[in-house]
Length: 155
Image (tube, rainbow, N blue to C red; front, side):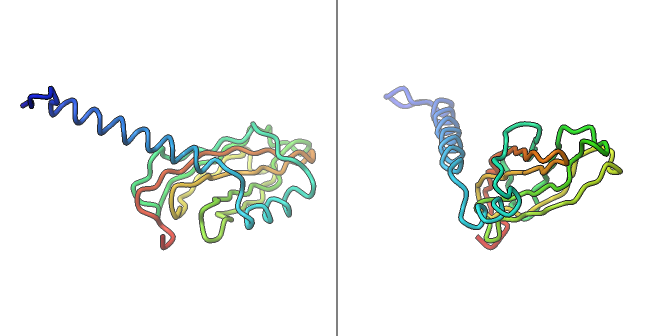
């Protein structure tokens, strides 16, 4: 099926898909901004004057979550988890949630591996950032953008 202008159903679908993909890219870049005041306060308490370094922390979530009420997340930190070198605290924040602290965990070398998997609630498309406070005094961070079509926190 085509019209006199040369617009076919297939071309219209491709154009729609490209537009949708562009909207996701714009939404992701719009959310990669500075932290909210509540997030900044949490980071200030954790960091105690230190600047988080990027790397060593990996945050994995689905690229698009249809329902923000239960979004799977896995946070992994590159660490040998020995008595001399291990993750002490892992803090996960989400800028757009009413309460940015999603969860925190205290780890010891007995954990064996610095990896936590769970499900979280995400209100809308936003940054999800994980901070790892290490036993050697360094602070590491990693982040991803959670794209949500139906919010999970009353939004």
